[in-house]
Image (cartoon, rainbow, N blue to C red; front, side):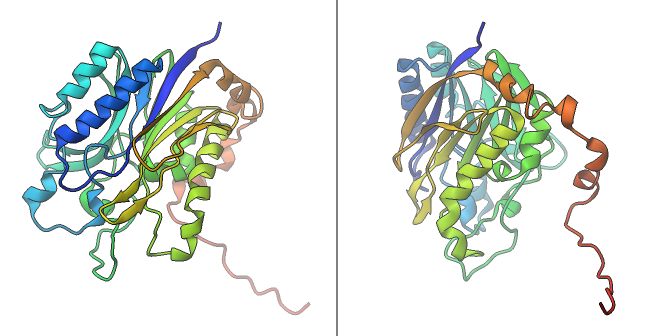
Length: 318
């Protein structure tokens, strides 16, 4: 018996700074409804799906900054999305900026949640690999200030039993790190849901801009194959506030093959019927962890944060 799941990957076109939550939620609901029409049981939305990508700016007004964050989820503004999901009996995964005031200090996270077909939150993930910088760089047209606006994750990489399988989440830059997939792979993950906002231009290494598309896919294809898991990756894309955002939302099989890919730079839903049982083709053979892993040799991965080359040794005269 197979475990087939009809999934949707909901790419979003640009969201402007002036767009209201209500306007954005209406777009999300439209994609969710399209997913229902096409038989989807689960739809994945991008990172920071409710607002423009505000870490591109250095902002000084704290009230303005906090306006990009959600103090609760669902909120009055996002409740219609949860209500419609429950009515349609379609689950979803969505990324947003989270303002956490539950402790003695206010914390801010780049967060995603998994919501069931009953409209209830199943799990929450907070972004581990925050890219960019925390200092203001006035000579750059656009900045990447996630380290300035977000706190480091306190969740790690959990997985959940849901939708008939084992599901996990990651956000944007997480997709570039093999540790992301392997930690979830060691928990038996069968579907990793990723949202991303990736600008094509990188002011630090502009000579790599032409490789953004290549790098975007290869890291997810490798992560999927090396851990025997499906990957659904939903992008925010298009010309957003003067910055060109990479699209190319994809659904990747455990073999590393791309089974569906967005072709536009706007709101677009791609779908696939995936069979979670084929994850075992990879998990039981090429990447059978129990049979082939040698963790006694992997200590540096957790013992050392940065790379330390071996010392120079005088080879003498030959």
